[in-house]
Every structure is written in C-alpha cells, then in structure tokens.
Length: 345
Image (spheres, rainbow, N blue to C red):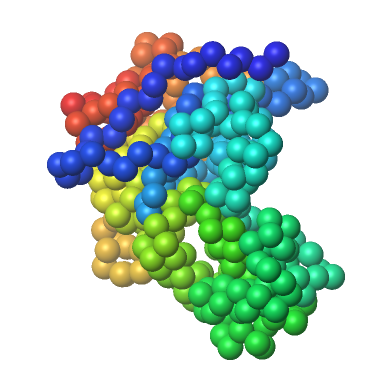
C-alpha cells in the first residue's frame, strides 16, 4: 500500500537576494523508495525534498549507489515512490489523468548517462529526434518535421545539420550521440530537463563543451535542470549560480547555494567530496586540506548503523550523539544541514 499522506514541508533555503524565488516547476516532497531484497528491504531513497525552478540548476551530488538515479527516476515519473509525492506545477503526478500526464511527459525530459545505449541503433538521427514531434502532432507533415529537427540539431551545435540527419548512432562519437539525446529532449519544449550523469562517459574536452551547451540552453530557454553527478567539479562548473544537494545513503545531508557548499563545505561528507576533487594548480594541490575518513567502507543499506548513517566513516564522530540519534535536515543561516557536530547557526 502506497502512503499518500502529506509529509511535513521541507525547510526552505535562505534567499540570496531580496524578492521571492519563482515557483518550482517540479517538487519532490518526502519521497521514499524501498526495494524488496533477499536480505530485507533496501531503502534506496529515504525522505528527499527537492525543488526545480525555471532557468536554474540543482545538482544532486554523491557517491555511486547513494540513490541519485533512483531520485531522478521518481522525479521524471519513471518510478513511483513508495511514499511521498512528486508535484508538477503543484499537482501530484500520481493523481493526474491521461491528459495531464501527457503534458507532464512532454514538460519533463530525461537525458540518460550512456550515449551508446540511449539511442535506438536502427533509427536515424532524424527518426529519433522527430519521433516525439510526430507522436504529439507538433508538426504538420514530414517536411516540417525534417525542418524542425534540423533546427534542433543546430541548437545543440551539430552543424551543419544536414550532415547528421540521416546518420545512425554507430556513425557518431559519444559526444555527438549525447547531443542528439539533448536535441530529442528539446523537441518537446521541456520546462525541466533531468540529466543523469549525462557527461560522465565523455572525454574532458567534450564534457566541457556539452556543459556549455546545456548552460546556454538553460539561460536562453529558461529550462530548469536537475543535474545528477558524482563529480563536485562538474557541479561547480554547471551550477555555479544554482544549488547543490549532497546525498549520502538515500538522504540529503547538505543543501545550499553552490558557491557556499563548494567554497565552505559544512558536512564532513561534503568536505571529503571537496577534498577529493583534483586541483590543477600544483601549488594549491600541495597545500590543499585532505580529509581522511575513519573507514572507506560504505554501510550496507539493509543493515544501516544506528544514529547518523555517516558516523562509522566520519572524522568528526562524537560518541553518544552521532551513534544514537539520526540528525534531521534543518535550516542554518546559509544552508540546510544534517549533522550533530557541525554548527548550523
């Protein structure tokens, strides 16, 4: 039985400047995802609250297996939460009728991690990108579909578009394939794009170029982004004017404006992630503080430790508090934080 009871609202981030923020297009309210397993239930996501607003980027950061992709799939309506709710324009997607669901499907688009698996190998670029246009009758005929598809390819820097329209995925590089996937998402005039590690399988130079393209589309089209990554350097580059939510074992442990989280990380786990980012300047690399964890082993989701999930690895571990009570995610003066030891004032 899926619990649809309304959870308590998440604490809001402190505003950066006077004036109200735009209303969120997509919201996750206390979402949980529990998978049954041979050794017991696996709480992949345990109460996550996120908001994606127009023209802004929210990066969800954490180690592999922390629940980022599961959260993204729930946000896109590809997986139903065990409890909690996903709201699109304030409407619970689980309560939508067929027409509302169709609008949601067009407005929230998903870019997968693997550019080699996300495209149908027997379809041309034109067929792939124009499929949604034709399915939702957004074009009058094949000639218009081809013209619109060419325009979408040019928007994602696949030029000249005529060189790509009739190609198959195996005839393109990984970066070109991922641009085709972006063009396919843009064809639906989305309000939100969920990018799940969409640059992690690309070379660094191609990665930066693709991030620049996504950033330009965000600014020009006012698209909101939920950007999933394990790399804080990528999050810093793409969402410098946005927000970062740091996830550990299915829970958000720190959430704030990107410059504050990256330049002054508060949670010990965030500090460890920041310290692991490669520093290109040799002088800064030599003087950079390294955070040493008490253990490299990540707890098993089927046998989580009492208290704070991070305490077996935490260098700031305080007996009697960290191993007894689970810290709630509460609002400090400049971020949301879940930690017994680090001050929130």
